[in-house]
Image 1 (tube, helix red, strand yellow):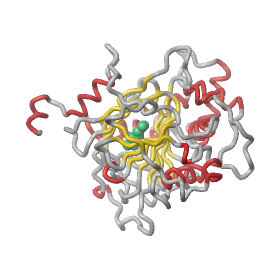
Image 2 (cartoon, helix red, strand yellow):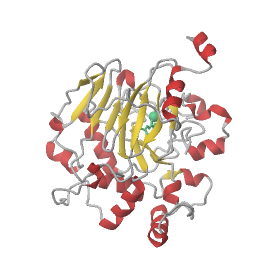
Image 3 (cartoon, protein in one colour):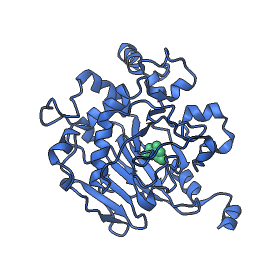
Image 4 (cartoon, protein in one colour):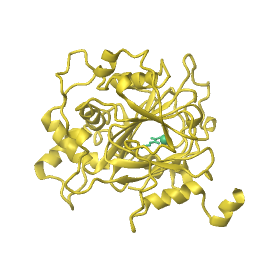
Length: 368
Ligand code: OGA
Ligand code: MN
């Protein structure tokens, strides 16, 4: 294998990544798995566990009853589960608003903090909507902070340079996202999942996310959950080695991916965003409104029309991905010296000679 990399100058993962990232001529998407119309030789139906889930409870988080979720596995990837948009009509709007308006707020950390003062990065939403509403965001206008947002970290804030989490850099994990994650993990066979860290990725239509493995968490027996909203992405799931040829799949708005068991530590990447054709800019599932009134004890709340106007404007050309991680096993604590040598995250973030400042700004290696 090593010889073949030397021969061809790049590994199978990088080759496919570059193929899907290419703009001219546009890539051929015919091999990309579409779980909404799954092909039987690669995909199988996955039975989820609705027993520990109280159906009323999942609906409070904006999810359909678990028995109605369309969940799939992929042959050759044990532990990988793909759930096709299990959200109730209208409920994605709440999660989108949290990602754009609430989660970028202090004390959470975002890429803009790396080169701006905390006064400047306070109220990203408020500062941006002012501009958006006043003069619109036509071409040639300076970008709003919202458009410059690339990542936000929650809970144990991931340190992009040392590739570690630290007990010294923790702020409370959003309880509604904890609750959503707890329910999804339980349905997938992981009761008691404790969301402790989140990385939100904000993709513009020309963004990509480099090839990496998420291994900085100290407990790898817990799954990694990934929620997608907005424009469709191509996701590449590889093997434990860069020479393993990855499988490409579409991730649409509302889709949830669970990487667990042997799939927890596989290479993966997002080579491109597949923007909707003009005139059809938001996936229909995002345009829906809630069918029932929210109750006081619901987790999700309705989104005001003026907030949704901004969210839908943003998502016409963007994708938001939320990854939720449990960092420690239950009862586990950080080792005394949570030093940088503890983790050797295989993320490609450090490739191509990027300096530390640049890496922190961009999070995972990405082009935007
Ligand atoms: C991550 C990640 C994938 C995505 O944040 O670790 O792999 O779909 N995200 O954006
Ligand atoms: Mn990842």
